[in-house]
Structures are given as C-alpha cells and as structure tokens.
Amino acid sequence: MLTPDGRLIVSVDHPSIGLVQPGTDYFATYQHSEEWTLGGHTALMTFWHRPLHAMTDAFTAAGLRINIISEPFPAPGARELFPDIFVDRPSGAFVCFLLFVLQAD
Image 1: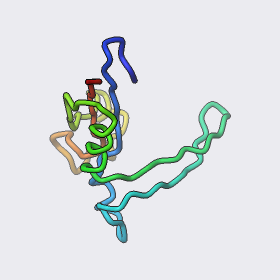
Image 2 (image 1 turned 45 degrees about the vertical axis):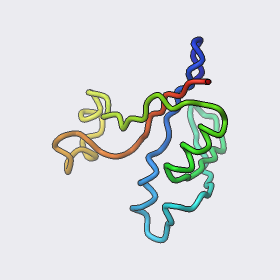
Image 3 (image 1 turned 60 degrees about the horizontal axis):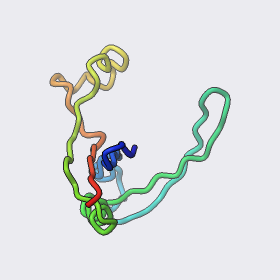
Image 4 (image 1 turned 90 degrees about the vertical axis):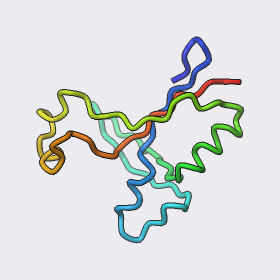
C-alpha cells in the first residue's frame, strides 16, 4: 500500500517459513502458484520465496529506505478464531509475516 506521504507498506511471508519445509533452500529464489476461491471467484495467486537479504536488497535497489521491519503478533481475536494454531504457543507468538515500512528517498 502506498500512502500519501510516500511510504510503501508491505507484508510478506516470513522467509524462514521455507526452512521448515523439507527439501527447500532458504537462499533460493523461486515462485509457486495456488488457486484461491473467494466469493465464488477463482484466481491464480503467484507467490515468490526470497530470503530476507534478497528482499531488502530489492527495496534499496529501487531507491527505497527501510524505516521498519517487524514481526507483528497476531490480532487479539485470532486465538479464539483459530484455537488449534495456538495450542503449542502460549505466548501467542509465531513466525508468519514480516511487515516492512519503506520510504522513497
């Protein structure tokens, strides 16, 4: 999302997610596609796996300054909506997304 003050806000899958899948290489860059259906409409979604350094390198090469990198906690109501995910995580924390706030130089 581009904000009026020139910030770009991006949320991506945490790059360490690839580490838990057997046979994946954290340092590799690759894409995969899935079909998603919402509201009766199907769309092909394409995702890219990139290690953290590849993401930050791409942002800075595009002339963007990284203001924030964070690993946000789930929304407060998530534990009630998805109780099975939180069984082994009493603190509620888990690695899932990275949030970047970037600024055009």
